[in-house]
Amino acid sequence: MEVLQMEKSQQKRSRGRQRLPAKEKRNHCVSVRLNPDELSKLDEIRGSRTRGEAVRLSLLSKLPPVVPSVNLQLRADLGRSLGNLSTLAGASRGGEYIDVSEIKSAVADLRLKLIGAKS
Image (cartoon, rainbow, N blue to C red; front, top):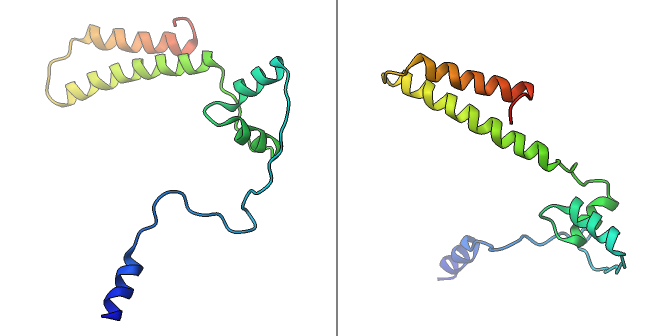
């Protein structure tokens, strides 16, 4: 009976976040006051992180670089163009008839976006 109980206790899965080792546990709280400009800069830098986490990562120089929204939009546009071209390629591999003008149009669209002439 004891062996069965031990096996069951060993099979328990821990749920949630794993506990940090004692050395890494964060017990100290630091309060900071910011003016509106500083707060907006922090909010711009932090992305989806909490403000406290962003301040801690900034202190440790571990914050990832901020990607300008223009770059995110261009990346999304390029992704759509590549997706269109990929769809045409998949259809042609699958034996479907694809009009050459569709392929030319998709390639031209991608080319213009790559050189920055079309957004």
